[in-house]
Image 1 (cartoon, rainbow, N blue to C red):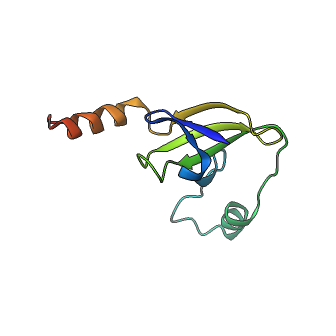
Image 2 (image 1 turned 90 degrees about the vertical axis):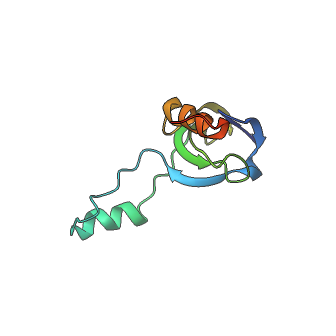
Length: 100
């Protein structure tokens, strides 16, 4: 399976690490609601069809990307940065030596 990193281009999935479901909402860090934490940690949906996922390009630029992947065909319909292009532009400035 190929994933397209917005910064590095198409790469084999072996360069990426799956980070989880892109739709899940984490409870507030100071929440004492054990039901909410239990659901967040243990309950998983197993959808058939398009699914939002978070992947990290751990074998490349280390950026996190939001991927929409069909769980039946593994067809990837989109891959965009989680933080957006503003983060990438500031990284480019730092690499080139310009001040951010």
